[in-house]
Image (cartoon, rainbow, N blue to C red; front, side):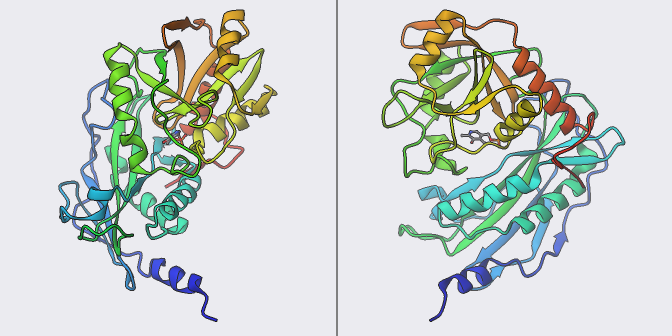
Length: 367
Ligand SMILES: *Cc1c(COP(=O)(O)O)cnc(C)c1O
């Protein structure tokens, strides 16, 4: 019997990794001031690659970043068949550039694509495409301790037509932006609201994939939090509305009686690369780590009793974001200014990322 898998693999294999260069490599550092707003200071190029069912991937184009020729009826725009990744490249002390945990992002991208029936983008191709983009744009990265090239690979269904189905045409893209600290320079902690009204992800849904629609569903809650003068939203589980899950784009850690706790990876939690990295660093420092369900009531009781001493969020964009204030309903908790665990883990992770410390786990890929 014919194995359906064979057809799928051949249709997604990238036959030809050649990239046509329509824009010259970057030659100078992008001028974006001392405090670049996150995701606004794009480097000049983008890398685009098209896929068609039955034909596979066509040759790539490195071109000037700009508007895309996509049909307004396309599936990505109408039905949200679109996924993304977020990873960073850091300038190293020797002047080179290293991408942080590129293969882990590649594997997640493949899983996200599968979840929304996009063509699975082979991890080797992801690594190759992102590497080629970084090589091309590396000279655009300015000097600076908190500066990085944030990379945004995208994959979306571009087939025109309003019928609901998996697209038979897709586009892979990579763009990059020069970024500094996510919340702006000088901001040392964030304020968070625990949402009682909304949930981010439900069992069986798309919460563990980086699917564009996940973020659309959180934008109203985020705007409401901003209107209150807060920065982020923390979500509870969809079933019991009891357990802490994560923020709209960052995983959550709680330091409880000296133990570092974070929710386990279920299908409603995005498996963060930063999360995984911090767990490894904490274990190496012999900080007890537990991946286990965390009831909000336990956190609230721990905060009252002074046993919960730190709460922080973790993700590629912000790295480690300590939470200084947290609200649920009318209750407000202010956390201590001393954050030894968050500080230690952040410092160690940043040192590995920017080449200031050895890389025992092989997390850096020098391009
Ligand atoms: C991207 C993301 C994270 C963080 O993942 P990293 O790999 O650490 O950047 C956490 N939660 C959500 C919902 C995300 O989209």
